Amino acid sequence: MTAPMLPRRYRVTENCRENADTRTLSLAPVDEPLPRFASGQFTMVYVFGVGEIPLSVSGSPLVRDQTLVHTVRAVGAVSAALCRAEPGTVIGVRGPFGTSWDVGRSRGRDLLFIAGGIGLAPLRPALLEALASRRDYGLVSVVAGAKTPPEHLFGVEDECWRANGVAVLRTVDRRQTDPCTGLPRPWTGSTGLVTEVLPRVRLRPGRTTAYLCGPEAMMTHTGAALIRLGLRPEDIELSLERNMRCGAGLCGHCQLGPDFVCLDGPVTTYDHAEPLLAVPEL
Figure 1 (cartoon, rainbow, N blue to C red):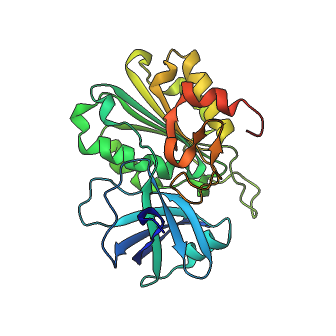
Figure 2 (spheres, rainbow, N blue to C red):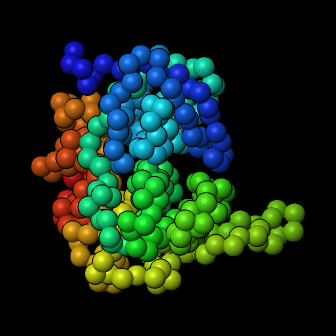
């Protein structure tokens, strides 16, 4: 067994509820810590006796206390076990794996982060990295979409992001209705797809780098919309999701055309990904 396949023990130090089915876990190393991660990379997280899944890191890559932060939604046995993990629970972690958001390349440019659902979690490290050097960047905008208002992530951070000059636009597919009154519950954001919010973003296409993460259909349509607005395809980065298992390009489960997403992704450019995503069931 090679080193990338050996999990290192981490202990859950905090389990914060984001919404009904999503938690953010803070992990402290029990064994020698993993190498530092870069924004957009992922780890393989192992719940002893249950199984292993890939999870993007959602914390800042600049913290130096060796803490790992993951945001996980309960959609299967392993993710549900992670959401239930109490402080003190020991789990295994391998990585970090994959390519990263190239925020450093965009110094001096405007940044546009567009997320669908839990896709905001893999984008958060890049946003936090940019905010740590806020003067190095121009306009910074976040467009986040979710099915309903309670499903939005990190809403409590909006005030802090706005205080750092970030334009935050949140939208939902549908508003919720109060079962007692039959009236829509209060919601201060927009209603509609993230592509419908784009005209409200102050956009300077020639100097903007966009970062997309969410369902593939959302990223495909959003990338096309950004190109129509004048962005170059190579200035649009997105994060692919496939069935990563080994994380080291050995098993082939995450193959997408000529790419192994665990090695050649998950972060890539729109001009590289779009032809691959256009092939049905590739």
